[in-house]
Length: 306
Figure 1 (cartoon, rainbow, N blue to C red):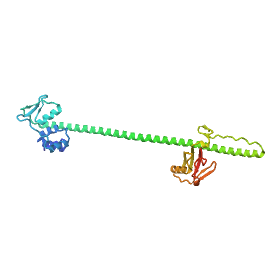
Figure 2: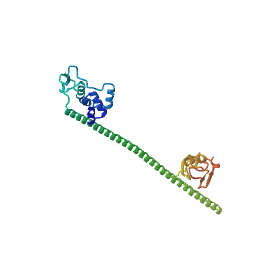
Figure 3: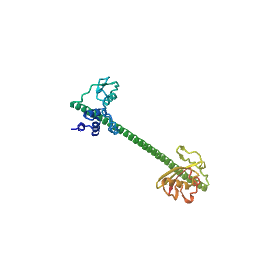
Figure 4: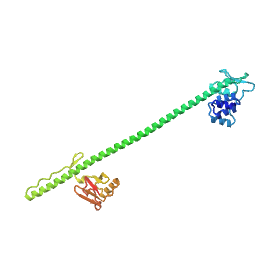
């Protein structure tokens, strides 16, 4: 069995084993080479070999058979082994020796190979553990990022829901207030008709007419003041359409045409006329040049879009 086959049977990478045999010249040199270069990657070793400095076993200086570390007494067959020892131990005091080191026995080579194999396996295990931990950290980062994104979406959704709920609540309150004002205006008109009828009857009978009763329209903040229609600068409109109710405050100078355009933009409905039930009025396109004030739709009104 060749030296290369021996290293392959021990489980060493074929490419690394081939470089070791080529650089070491024999099994013992290959073993030494593998030990010195176990920390280097295969790419680094192949690059070094291509450049002609494959870290072959250089002999000790001329006249010497070995090198010895004066700090620990360990002996080395050549300079590469001594340099490797220095890099690992930090020892710097070496000297030449005339002692020729005997080659490794088969049993020693076997033990050496087993040590190299154990170191290689440990290195692989350490790398696998590091890769697993890195994968775990990356997965935790990904999960945290995903959770933060989902929390942000949930928070945005919650705020939108609160905003929609507040808008619906506000529209409902405004709708209630508008209905109250309409009902109050209907009651006031009814009372005024009753008063006129009583005044006409009193006139026919030659009696004194009853004094007019001043009705106060309710507002959201309590009884209304004596503010006249001409003093209002805005009016609140509620327009019923086939696509839902449209509520908005307009300047009293706003024309009916501008109101129809605003409703169309919001509800996507074409309007040919606006109808007021109390009192009964119909505003068609011929009337759309009128302002809300001129149409008597101040301070508030409910309309139906046709």
